[in-house]
Image 1: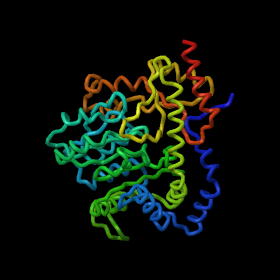
Image 2: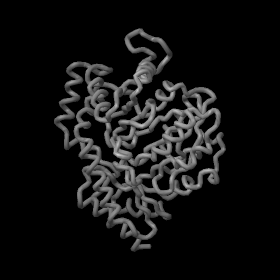
Image 3: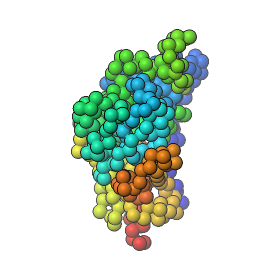
Image 4: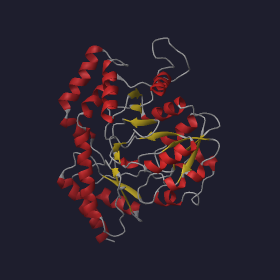
Length: 370
């Protein structure tokens, strides 16, 4: 039985092996392991490709959010509004900054924060909003920007899953005060270890972010504030610079695969395929369907050698670190419902036509066996 993984990082490496190996060797030859020209080149290339003035590399996507929050002055006693449905980094970093996460339910079609439910959560302590561009689909930014502007709130875009996705023809990560990215290996633009970045057009904010990420210093021993040690290393930056040349074609291929899945699977049983917001360019970090008998389908596909994922099995407010906030299913009915129904199918640019059809056929066979 031929196995189909949820993602295949080796297949991507094989396609660019020489360029990646040469890039890594160049870093080793120059011993440019921390900071240095390779990091600078990637920061500048990533910022330029996004059309933003500043790109600051950090150690990972979680640090990126925490550092952005600190740089924007979020701290003890503040509240930050965010989605109920994301990876834990989105919310735990709010706590790390000393603030309280305030969770908003998701849109029933697009899985991102529902803008119509944000304003009712704003209080005198609200300092910022963190919309997440989940699964590669941009959040509905226009109403979010309008609400934030009216209430004087900062916006940090959590773009960890949406490298170069677009909303209304504009790249995500270019709407808010700052945007954060993860380069975890499985991301559309993934390193060969941890890595992250913050983007901003604000010169003063960029300087604060650089200081916080580097022990509070811009130069050696220039410690004006207390910071953290969160730096993108040279090898990861060099790998990312290679991959940056290919990310557009990889994203196009992911979108093609997503369309193929949707065309074939829409209307089969109770399976709900992803809907794309009319203003969004979805880059399918993952392809997530919704089904009543999620665990049964997962087991069925596993028996056929097809790996799947659950993004995510527990909505954020119901994880133990946030239990003290006392959210219930009544507060967040859609996130509560969907956490038991979502399933991610294999999605990576190197999927072959045969593999894609195998996944589709396996899903169809599940419903025939019902």
